Length: 241
Image 1 (cartoon, rainbow, N blue to C red):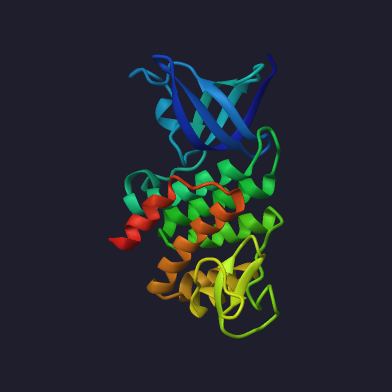
Image 2: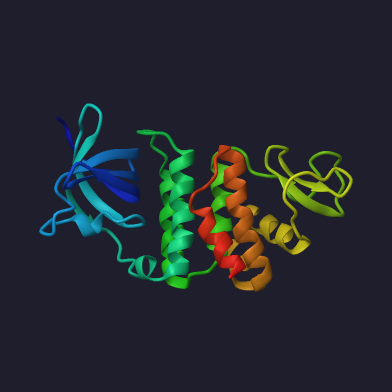
């Protein structure tokens, strides 16, 4: 079995047998990896705590026929707040599930890895709610489905843009309206993000627009994948709270 190393983000884990876990990761070099971490549910496991969702690790694997095997793991970056702060954890969950649902096994995508690790680092540093929509907008661009947000995708109108439908390709005016509503403030912020002015949006967007964009980001991923995000419920509950 060939041995390889990769820097990776842990996307999710689930139990296998009495002491093992299956770990789904997104690696810088390999793309999405599915591997068995043997014995990590035992109290004396050397690296079980490092294989938590959202962790950025450097790991060693044996390449297996169906599942690889994690033999070593160490944290590449320290991100303690992502594990202890509930709001941050909810946002991390959206990022991880979005990558899990939009990527294939063993399909290298260094740009996606850079986008994900950058978003996790920014969430650790600031906890800013707008990290989620900024991440989703860039993810959709990498997927080749960047929405049009400056004019109606149906008739071309540049005013009264009131909804967004990813299956249609972007925003729609009042006459062509379909999909979730979008305020003009949120639409303008999304436009800034898609034109590369992410830092401006992170620093200048009011709280109400932040909340709207955060919920909208989850819906956009759901429209793209045609699957409900389990983690989106966390965001909706936070908005209602």
